[in-house]
Length: 147
Image 1 (cartoon, rainbow, N blue to C red):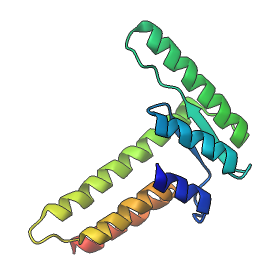
Image 2: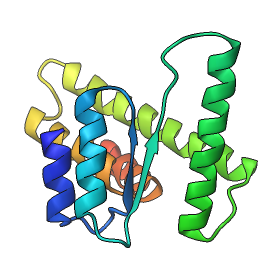
Image 3: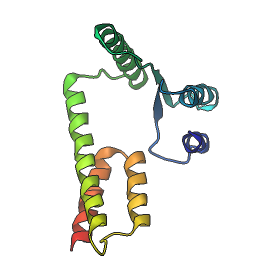
């Protein structure tokens, strides 16, 4: 929580456009309120309530929360979110996960093809860069490291 707050308050990342926080604990909930107070008005902020129980009512509740989230994104971006957009986003994020897995596999080799500090920098980039750009750069990087 502290590093997320620090990151947001410094706003030194050119790729940062906003944050979605979930109702998972008191610290996360409080982080949302602090963010709401200190963030620039140009950044997106949304609090996603998660059901705490299982069952049909929880599914209905979560569906309504996702619909609210979608509406908030559409309002912020002035762009409608289509099912095809979501499918493409899932594909891109799955590609990121696959590429990071390849990175982790390189770390398992003896000796590792990649030092831990470099792997940590790559993971940090995966969390802050636009995913398409990151995937292209990581693909090239993994190819070079593999050579």
